[in-house]
Image (tube, one colour):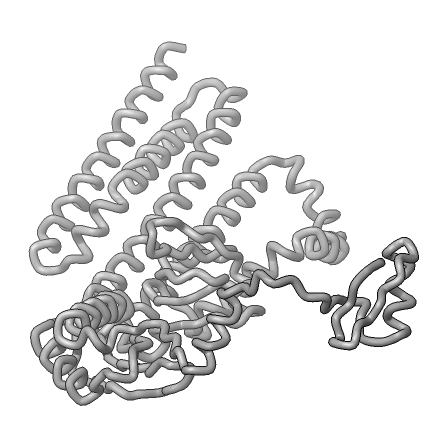
Length: 393
């Protein structure tokens, strides 16, 4: 009896020793390769733990299968170690997927001005990575279940009813599947990318994350707007960086008719020359309207991206307002009321009251009016004199 356990202990030690040797050799090989290739360092960092776990599980499984003395417990422990090998293998495969995508993403930087291709590759890589990891997990769970005899026994009946089950599952998870397919459509149609600047649901923000079910927008005020993927396939939205990040913005001002557009145009040129926010593509100052007592001046400027354009518009607006206040106070918009002679006379009549009472009223002027008046004056007769005045008896 003790000889069997001694043989098992020796088998475990030998297996762990072999696993340790393989792990050390792999580690040294990756360190040597990391001096010339970046992917070696990423592979070592991502896959070290799952690779060592797989080696230990395989070594223990081999020792149990070859030297474990108890036949009953050998199958139980072997079953557990088989599940551990499957889990470690799935973990290792998922880590390899992460290594491949990390290396690919490292070659495409998005912190550079012209990053449209990099943002497209990054978006597709992230979604493919999530999809691949999900598939590996599902396959791993299925492999673990198939290690049980009872599950394999019902496998035939499950496959026979797979058609009906798929229909029921599709109807039950219709919204989920719609979001998944919408996410794939968004990514591979290049309609939306990570770091795109968009206006969706009335909010301006930058795409921070795209998954298979939802999209996260990083709004300008540090809020996060989470929208389902189906929103971007069924609802119109603005993408300000679809083909490039350069934008054109407008600044509008309502000023008095005494303003000088030529002088404003000269000052605008001076303001733009002194700032690095302007990308020198376009600068226009035009009078677009002149009605209702105001002159509408529109300024068009360009910048390399949306945040820079917003800062540039604020800078130009403030500079022009300050300049108008300082150099052209007569151009500040005001409300005017013109008083003519007729208007003044009419105002005087409304202000000056004649203290002499008159008999002009609502119920005078005709016999019919006087009859109507009698119903309100208790039938007091109204006598008209020759001078046209009225008196009551």
